[in-house]
Image (tube, rainbow, N blue to C red; front, side):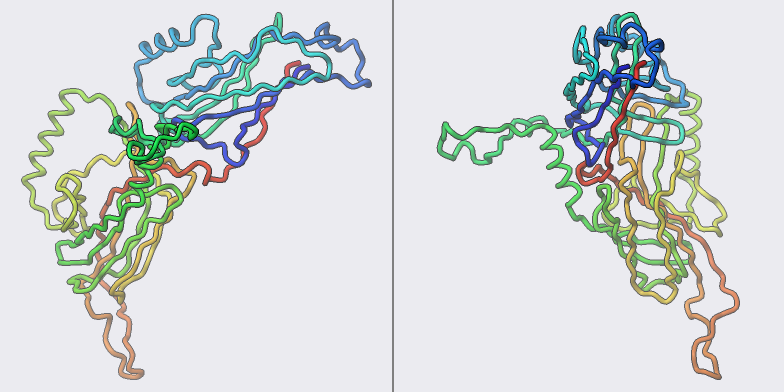
Length: 433
């Protein structure tokens, strides 16, 4: 009996970024039966040597979706890539292989003595152009290291090791790639004993990502409805990493409409990307022309720092004519915060970003975005009740007229360093009898 064990070298986290190297230790052992078991149950191979014809390992990215996708071209491309004698990984997992690295041969014609163990080292780069690990409503992307072996005169056996992949944005300027550690290399004196190290594309991507998420660019949004000015929201930066907190402030000073309470939800949008027919495009254009002629007063007006195409209109519950909403796709609420702020002049909003979610990305079938979903409960009652003649304190009103206003603010979420996410991996094994 042969036992195969696989364990990732990175023990604290089974998470990798696109372009990062995955390292795995693969162990092949010839297990010996106990003396209590009768020898009649052993076959010829188990009585002596175990002969493995070959073993290989490679990285696969699978896609499982309910969308209709043309698979003819992709199947032909994978057939040319894999070849005739390689492992057919399509039949090994419930999904379609969209990214496959070249298989690496671990050994050929390996003989194992009883109790003998052989350990092999496998390493591979995660493709930069591949999608991240994502588990959505209508589509899934997942990565697995496929370890395959075949005993002589037996069928092929496979062992899969799942990993999580985070997307790293590719630098748009390729001229930044040939950068060395020495920034003033031309001015510094030449030292033949100092080894020069070229910075990899992944390191430049991490440096660029750090600059993007650390940059503070406060933007102020003026929020109002048909009754008047509600408040002003300040978002300190538009880009965040996994594990960070989205921090903002709400200022109700000088408002014309009281905000009784509000809630902020961090939502993930799954927008399908599908080819549209000319009839659909024509109907959308006609709807857009009609909507542009409607002058609605129930809008969340955004004052400064936001382009016209990124404005988000908010419709209150008392609106008579509503504009056609933009496609939202499938929504998933990740975290929520709620505050009662009737007599509050200024407050802050803190929405945490979990480490297990998938950052912003897009493929040829889906576009995953993030947004902050605000729900404001407003009232035209500026004074909170009347004074109580007995105690001299304010007496809460029995009824209060309220309206609800909704506003969506898009944000961008990037990946964090995989080493900062604690996700211990386990050992995966396979027994071949």
